[in-house]
Every structure is written in structure tokens, then in C-alpha cells.
Amino acid sequence: MKIVGLYLMSEKGLAVLQAALENNCDNLIAFVCVGRDKNVVNDYSEEITQLCNLHNITWCLRGERSLDDVAYSIAVSWRWLLPNTNKLIVFHDSPLPRYRGFNPLVNQLIQGENEIGVTALFASEEYDKGDVLEIKRTNITYPITIHEAIQKTLPLYNSLGKTILGEIMHGLKIQGTPQDESQATYSLWRDEQDYYIDWTQDAEIIERFINATGFPYLGAKAKLDGIEVLIYSAKAEGDVLIHNRDIGKVIFTRNGKPLVVCGKGLLLIQNAEYSSNGNSIFPLNKFRSRFSSFY
Image (cartoon, rainbow, N blue to C red; front, top):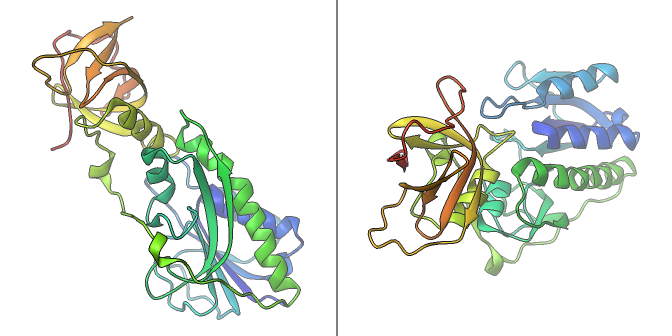
């Protein structure tokens, strides 16, 4: 009986669809609604729809048509409100109740968390406060890019997908556990402005920020002498005593690549290009260069 609707985005959504097929749960799927994301290099919408076509699963893009009522809905990487939260199961990119909200994986990496995870929970009136069905966790070490972190979470999504869909397939009652509100933290939404580097921060934090906003996202941004650049990789280095500490200024170069003064420490820019044409910023045209934020 086709009683499950899937709302899927990203490689994580693809992992849950693959879990359904691996667990022979495709006969449960009434439809797959696919979301697109212009803020990533690859949103995996094509891969999801191709897999649906291969297995004769009904699918549509978000907003194309009204969808049938189903007994259960499962939303993965979904960023839009759904009309009916009854029996809506959400897969969230953190071990709840920590990092409720938006971009939780990005913010976990920026904060330097040593553990990341995925939570399956029932939807609620207030976002990410519903009863928890199950949490999967994995440890990480730094440096780590957002792409590498996503790859580490994909098996967690796959495993949760098999568990939840397996319970539905066997007619089991799906029950959750209330969250501990005393442990709750929140993660704010991000927009274009939030891709810009804050040079007042420590070099180690900026390094994590650059790694957390790279592929499949568009990359950390800065202004180099007033011209926008994308910075794809950098490495925090030890500090030196600077009497007139003016953040963002280049203090040294190494093999044509700049070391930039941060709030604390220095940052070696390893890979960067101009936003307008994709040309490398190396070698710098002048030693007296300044990196600045959007503001």
C-alpha cells in the first residue's frame, strides 16, 4: 500500500530514497516531491528524479501540483513549510535538541564540534521541538570540509531511512521521546551576507568557516582591495606581535600567497579566485593588500 510521501532535497534526500529501495520499501512510496536549491553547486534533484524514473516511482518538483494525502510524510533537507504536520517525520542535521533550526551542520563545523549527527523526529508547531524517534551520531576531526562532513552523515541518513520505513512497512507503532529543553540550542538561517568572512575572529575559526562554506556551497567571500573574491581553502598559523594590529592586512607572503592578519593569529590563503571571472588571485598584484568583509 502506497502510504508514504517523501519530500527530498540534496544528497541526503537521495540517501533516504536509496535506503527505501535497498529495504524493498518502494511499494510504500505514494510520491516523491523534489526540491531545488540554487545556493549549491549540485542539489541532486536530477539524481533523485532519475532514481524515481528507474523504479517507476511517481515524482514531481515542488509546487508543480497538489499532492495526495498520505499516512506518513518524510522530509529530508526540506526548507519549506508543509501544509499538514500530522504524521510528518523530519530528518534534521544535528543531534537534537542541540542546533535546532537552519544550517545546523555548517554551524557545527564552524563551532568546532567533535560530534555531528542526524535526528529523526515528528514535526511540531515550533520548529525542531517534536518528539525524537532516533538519533545517529559520528565523530569527526579537524580540518574537515563540509563536503567531507556530509559524506560522513550519508550513512546515518541511510540507516535512519531504513529504520523508519521498515517500521512503517511492518505496521509498527512509531513513537517518539520528548526532547530535554534544558539542552536546547539554536542555529540561525544564513543568506548571501553570511558567506562573508569576519576577519575580527580567530584564524582557526575563520579556517573552519571557509571549510564549512565550500563545495557543495558557493564558498566563503571577502573583498580584496574592494573586489569580491571567493576563498576556498586556508590554513591558520601562529601569531606574531603586531603593535598596530589592523585586521585584514597582508603581513607576509609565502610562495606568492598571502598571510592575513586576523583578530588572533594569521591565515594563509591557499586557494582563492575573483568572483567575477574565476581567475586566481595569485600572485597578488601588490604586497600592500587588504582583505575586508562585506560591511
